[in-house]
Length: 330
Image 1 (cartoon, rainbow, N blue to C red):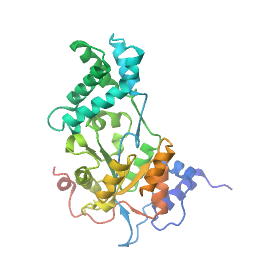
Image 2 (tube, rainbow, N blue to C red):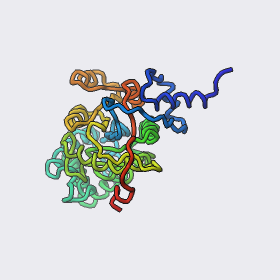
Image 3 (tube, rainbow, N blue to C red):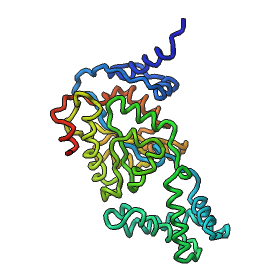
Image 4 (cartoon, helix red, strand yellow):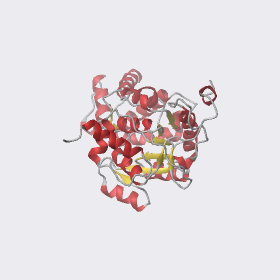
């Protein structure tokens, strides 16, 4: 008699939870594991000071967990038309290039989305207005504001973003393994306030490290250092006996992204493990990353298989000597 799918799933869970397994589950098996609500086995890893250990995983957002929908020129052009501003084809086709220039100019004038100087919404207002100035639309003040408000609303909703299908299952898998998960992103706080929760990812993330709040962007080491401090308290949660309050070390963090300099070089120079995702099958670019020493994978299922194959010790282990109130300074 064939074994039931529930039994099959339990065997995959046991396989993935055991630190010394020599077998790598197939992609199909891992997909089932991701979609299963089965809790991973509580097999205790053997003590081995030479083993590599991952206690926290940080991810880039766009291109890693989240995909961008449509094109800038489409979103901006649609917003302008909805507000009664007609753009000739040559102007609309130039929006992407003009936006890139406006983004660079605004970033130079006000780094990290204005950090503490202005709100992120005001930063984007200036960037959007400068974009249309470069396009040459000649909008007046009221038209500028109406178009901006519509664009700002668009980029806070489903019209502009999708979560990759493997993002939430991967984060859930990490959560079941006792790994603190979060993001390190050159972005403003709206990702954490609305976009990630809207996409169903907010509930499976513990720490959110944005350049807007930190005042530094990847690949600067300060944003990676900040992520360690933000991830550390979460290592005490989701364990009835409050496991693992020992300080989080850089070498116990894995960063996953899609930019060689910002994500791979930045993370490895900060002492993290780092992997890159080639979500869009950009073979030449991915090969250049590999030539630079990076490990490159197609998706997050590949990452789980890699962690199993390389026999990383995953999650928390040590006894916690504090309490939740002290960890979070409540």
